Length: 265
Image (cartoon, rainbow, N blue to C red; front, side, top):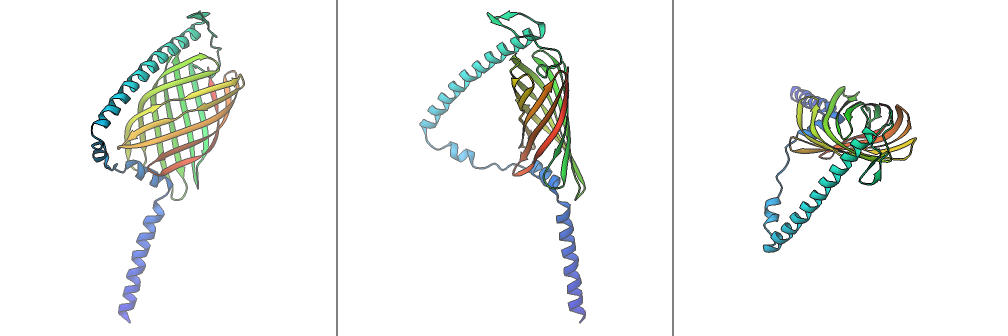
């Protein structure tokens, strides 16, 4: 009778250890593990060797087209940045086009802007998000910090961005920013990497703004994709905002609706 009893106790101990390990692996733990996992090399080398000379011809054509598009993008970015500076200075016209000066307290081309949001992430996870931006005309600097909190298991995960911005806003109706910088993911371990962002804002009415602010960050050879879409009711010096944010890496996601406010000068 002693052997079955010992076997039963052994099985019970093993099951308890396994279940306790599973219970500790929550939503935030899964996300951090996915972000820190090494990327597989795949079979890109083998596939690139197929096709003989035709591959080289198509790649050369693609390189030429890509180079032309890049040149056009740089020219457009420079012209748009010059228009942003003209709006800040109150220049009446540029290149024969009337310039609409930026109004103090408007959300576009802010001298200083603060965003604060509360997000209901899936399950028992939630997030507080703070973003600050400062700059003048086409040049800006932004920092964004999001803290995710999970109740069961109790866990936290911090995601932080810092981007230098080129801000393009030729009119109050439309604005586009190009940002490059760094990202940090801080949970059980701290990891960092390169980050880029391309926020786009559209104001079809002086009191309404739609904003799409994607960001892409490379950490541990994994791409974290951050998609943030929102709508805001705008008044001078402030906005009320609702939106949806989706952050994903290697199949793991943190997503859900959010609400918040903005203060802009």
